[in-house]
Length: 173
Image (cartoon, rainbow, N blue to C red):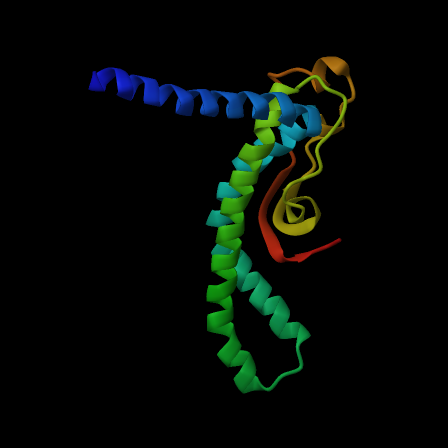
């Protein structure tokens, strides 16, 4: 008798979970439609985010040196700022690289589901699009408007914006 109660008790929870998942699947694509551009941006963020994390110490040094040139403080303040500033900026850039990977995964899901749609989703993490980076390369595949290239799922992972070592403290809006 207790087995039957336990089995009956599980069904409402499972049904509620299934209904919630079904509503999310049905309603989310209607409110957030995607395009190959969203898929490409999501894949690019997932692939380039780990490089942001690896280059975080270099970007931290670069940002500290640029900031020290732009401020008019005493020599003691400049020396006292350098080490904790570098540590703070390195951790900030590392954390933003992790967020870039996470947002890339979030953008890839609707990008895959609605690959052939004509609309686009705004970037979830704007500094990736607008900020300077240690290394940028204008991938020629991004500009190709040939439908065979634009909608080709084999080409999409290679038609990404190559941007590594992003300066997350200073987006160029």
